[in-house]
Length: 415
Image 1 (cartoon, rainbow, N blue to C red):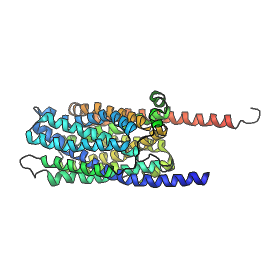
Image 2: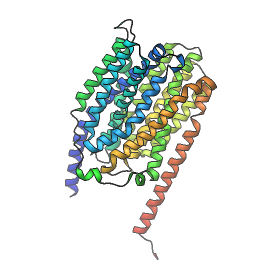
Image 3: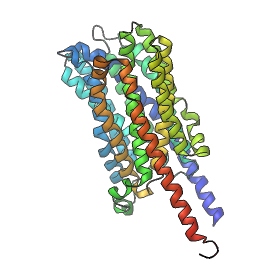
Image 4: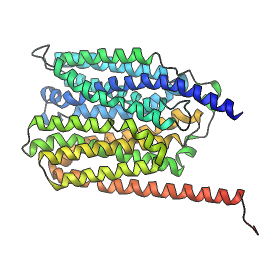
């Protein structure tokens, strides 16, 4: 029986590895699409908006789309399978590019905001790539599958900015109009890749099985995973989106800013090549705690000076911290649900993370403008402390339950 189980796990992992390759490629292509939006959104917004204060609204609409798309994505995956959700998501990506280009050509700010919102829906679907990589994998392989897919973001950090650089002036005088056409083409390529994913429609028993969502999310392990995800992603986004403008306010050049953001993206996804191995060796809670501490360290660096080196170091350390914190929190979520519960639990977790991120995205610019770069960094510390506290409490509860279970199964003399 043990040999049969081991053989099944090996066969399952072989199927998962094939999926991981496709999902990693799709992660790179989808990440390139979001990079196009973040590289151009505020610039196009400043050109099209009726008031310069609304220039960053397209980026906020992208984040709102991320939050709005998580629960529907999970519902579609649960009812029809992940492949259907992925195809719909990439379809939104195609519409993002076509509508974005049309909005620039027509000079419509409202249409451009609609385009970035659709880009957020596409991004929401892509957030489940990391969970899809773990479907059917053995317990030992799951963290590696998640981290390998996230590693596709390294190539997104290279492909996205270069896509903008190569295409932004092709349709003069409409800056970036052709960049969004190319974004639509990239989404089509991602659709073709994801069409080959081995993700069958859930069995009828899976559609109605499992525990109620409220029962699952009350688990200390899930609470800790969700809070750590909420801390690691929105805090990273807060500092990252504020840094370019803060650098400009401190008299640094645009090239300095671009260099910092480029290496921030590499730092975000580069560690994914070994994050899974770290989780397998040391456990997800320790990796998450390390990630949160690194985000606090990044904020400390940001408070220590305003030279280009300080900003670059802040962004690089912040990126590594986000990777360990977010990938580790994702691995924790995988420990809290049964197979038939995965879609609704994972979608709810992402809804919490990106819902908080959407709220924060509208306030980050105001925080920097009214209180300065130091205030942006100071805001990081209380949430990090909260995440570490909840993580420690959840680990304590888990160890205590394990000891009580051991004592009940193996009572000592006289018990």
